[in-house]
Length: 362
Ligand code: NAD
Ligand code: GLY
Image 1 (cartoon, rainbow, N blue to C red):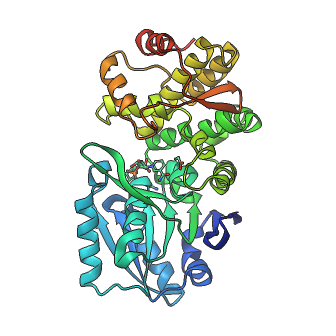
Image 2: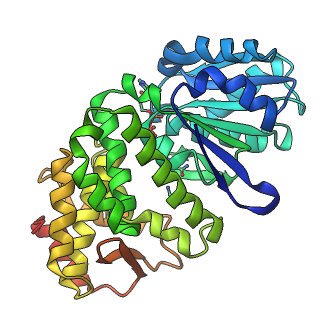
């Protein structure tokens, strides 16, 4: 087991990463997050796969847990589900001496984290992420929340977990497209923050795609360490944390314009290629950066162009409504070299229109 720390003063917390962590979950919770009872919040798919194992691990450490489930999928990530889960917890007598375990992908993590932030004005929680995306991104950093019809993640809170328990074995049951979507975020860390890691992902592609356990632990640890460092510098996204949104300004708009039929990590891959194209057109980056990013994403079977069928005007409208815009200024995280990005709102609008219109990646 490998342990990292997210250093946030009195809100610091450990991230334990490795194989068979689920079996040790009860003992690890006892050390860091002792509670009377644990409300295990999970979607129905993950609950079927891992719910019993988690409850057993709690029992093995003489801890009590109860499972609360909701239907799998982004469509569940709304306020009514939070109200329903809170109601079920209240009916079962959960109080401020208890804690929440978020077991599942980013949807479970965002919902359970938000519920923890507001249930009885806040109870502690732990993240137990089970998708690659959740293990490398959403379980770390304290962003929690739900969607409203007007947009994704528009209601939420920064609320840090007390610990993150990452069992990389659970990735073996993840559908292939969900794994690849997670790789979109993994490649984002390399392309945006760490050129050596980017090259490592190129060299170890076969082992990673064959879900080699040592490689999985290694890449998840590396991504968590990179994210922890950024979050430590800028917990509430006042500045530096925006580098994590590399590929997201155009990516989110593409995802929304596809009516969420594109998985988030696929949209981020498309968004990284589009913004690299933009960086080249605006003179911020050499073409080699765009080529290298596109080549690696393609090697992992990820999409690199905006689907022809998506309406460009809708993409532009979604981009302008993005919550990452500040005072109506839209910021882009542009690659300037491999592993380096620059945040700017100084974009040539004609170049942006060309990127969206001509949909070329090289
Ligand atoms: P998800 O939680 O819906 O999981 C995807 C699917 O995989 C679900 O059907 C789930 O049941 C299934 N699944 C999960 N683990 C499994 C496993 N081990 N084996 C088999 N099936 C498994 O989606 P996601 O991609 O993990 O997360 C997307 C969400 O994360 C979005 O709502 C997004 O907004 C959010 N997000 C949040 C942050 C943050 O910082 N808080 C960052 C990125 C994304
Ligand atoms: N997923 C981006 C962030 O946590 O800031």
